[in-house]
Image (cartoon, rainbow over all chains, first blue to last red; front, top):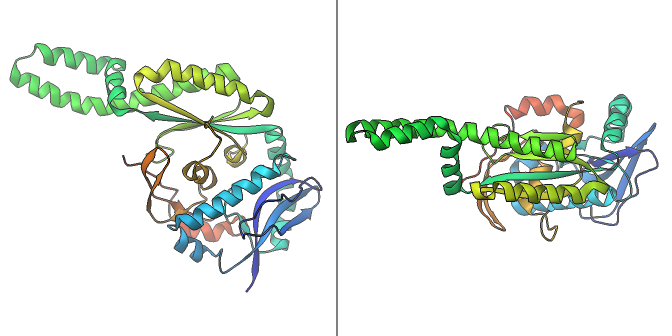
Length: 261
Length: 68
């Protein structure tokens, strides 16, 4: 059975210390692959277990997915306690040392820039959820068109009121979309002016239907600030049915994946 | 901040399997106070040294949805 390399993170040569936690293979036998000024922390894994076909097949097995995910996260989090490594997403695989060395050599400049960008920083994620009932009332108050239709429907005779209510249903969908975009922009603006840190806004469209969220790349020492900014936002939007959840600190997965600003 | 910094499976996978790194299939799971989160994972290996192969196989971006 051939082995391939599962890569957790990339850092400055000589800077990555193998953590004392389990890797995705359940062992603590990590392999550091060095090339020029960079190195990568990896586990040697069985190609049969981590082939595209096998991963596809096991993708619905949440025990397996969770085990790999948690182990990956633990390794990366432990690694970042001692260095500013570039965290890679789960299932980053190379066919062997030479392929990985080739990648480190080819991408040395770009990887160096990413390392610089995330140095001393962590990722925080603010999830924006909605209490359906409260938020739909808020959408009405945020939409002048809806408010106007509601007023007209109240005064109109029954036949016309019925038509107006049907129109309102249609308008409500547009208004909900616009109100959500407006809300996310407001929260982004608030975070930007309070923290002045790089952000990635993941809209509902970008997240293919799930609630939107905003990722913030913040210097470690400033972590307490985002907690207080999130509290301010919760107070400000709670009455509208907005449920904000702050998670972190995460290794800066999102900001490593983003293209250069 | 999560109260006890106990990052849930959903949140962990959300960070780890995001944007072009995820798998195919569906599953219904119940985690913490998120009742039924329906993950339509569409995972494509971030197989950096064989991206071309992955792209050919992927045939679409990651797809997710929450159903309440």
